[in-house]
Length: 221
Image (cartoon, rainbow, N blue to C red; front, side, top):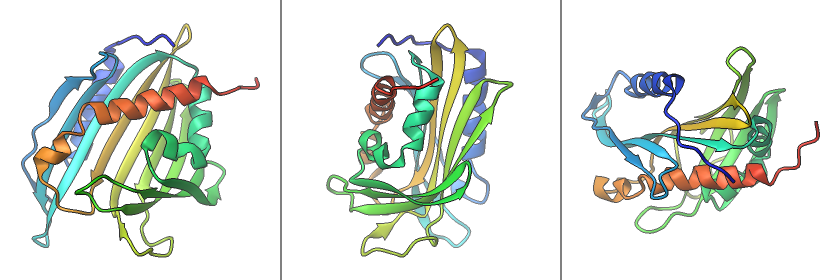
């Protein structure tokens, strides 16, 4: 599988817009964004781990990142992977992933169960996933947002702040630009330095596994 590192103008604009959107109003925050390359040099990761205090005076730790890669893969193959919700666990390193219901033709209710390494406790997540295709810009975007009350609570902590976006853009000549944008509040208060150890290889690993799965797809045109 051929991977090409590319910094396009559209990617720069998308990243800058994402950063503005992620700095949500209503929080007292001190954020520092760090830009890094994965060890193999194929993935660019911009990340921020910060403590924020909400309007009620509660402190939360936010993990945010934007990870990008350009690879020799078809958009349709990436879309096929995202639509197969039972296989999300394979690129997210989750213990379980499954579809709870079909909301509309292009939206689903999904469930993830995460068995995390110490000192992070196990947690789960219920989210709405929506797919939007833009023929003008040749992009397909999957957006997940937390919906914690739409499925019965289990005997583990549930993530209530979970915003994840996968964007696949057809660049032509067989190339696709993949961007993952994530903004999540973990269920436990873990030291920031421990969370920072997730970057840049954590998001890079997600993209590499997603690409590997996409290249294994059999697409019927």
